[in-house]
Structure formats: structure tokens, C-alpha cells
Image 1 (cartoon, rainbow, N blue to C red):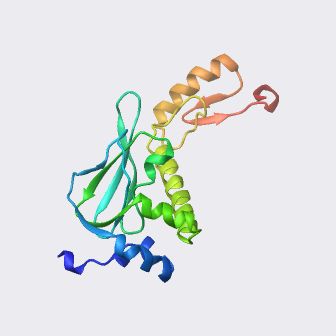
Image 2: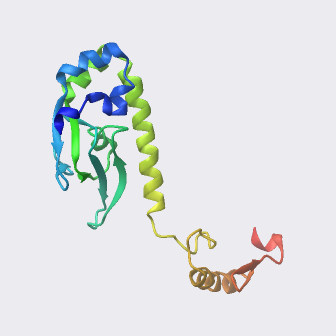
Length: 189
């Protein structure tokens, strides 16, 4: 099925001005993305950028205690190869098999040196990816109850428990049946 693949199936490549696309096209190499393949492992080196056309790459971040979670998914809208520059412990694994076009980072650097419009598109894509990673990281965290008692996603019993710990100490509010009553604004501040 590789004969059906074209670089412009990747929306990032399709958004490039024709002049830039034509410069990069001979440097793009079609490669299979087998499911489960580790495209990048934390601490590794890569001088390759992948532009998925039909494959899906998941970015996994790991903590110091060894836990990991999915922080982003990259499909035909984007590229992988810049995420490891974001200062995170990242592993990239193919989640859905398919194909991608691979480009050597040296070709990308050459576009930067030329002041290519690719730089602007890459900056916009990186900002969007960073925002998705930040959002996914925050959404995947378990709710912290106590600091801000009415945390979205926290169970009623967690809120009641946290309120019971805070209320008697401060005397600033009363908590009953998951309802907080503030008797006096002066006692809260």
C-alpha cells in the first residue's frame, strides 16, 4: 500500500509553501511505522524528524519514580522529532501502525538558515503541541484535595474529608453535605 502514500497526506507538509515543499520533497523518505515500535527512547539521540501520514505516534512522559503516561498523540496533522527538545523525559511509541515520511534534521536546519517560512509553521506547531502536553499533563493528574477543597473531579467524600480537617482548625467555614457556608468574610481573610 505504500504506493498510495504522498507527503502531502501529512497536513504540516501540505501547509508548506510550494517552494519549500519542493526543496524538501527529495529529502523525504517513506518509512513504515509498525505498532509498538519505539521511535524515540528518553536519553537517546535522533537526527530524524517523522511526518506521519497514516501512522499514529504517542508521546509518553515518565516521572522520576518510573511512572509514565500519555501526554500527546501525533498523527497526520504534525511531526515528531522536536518533542525531545522540550526538556521532558519522553518516549515516543507507535500507537497505530501506518506510514510516515522521515527527514534528516540537517535538512530542517538548512531551512532555518534560509529563513524559510517552515520556521514560522514549526514554531506555531511546537506552541500548539506544548499547550496540548501541558493540558494533558494537568488533566491526567489526580485531583489535589485540601489546597482548593472544591476541586473539579474530586469525589464528595474527599471534599467532605478535606473540609472536616480544615473547618475545625480555622473556624472560617462550616461544611455540611458537600456545601460550604462562609459565616463571616472577615474570618476567611
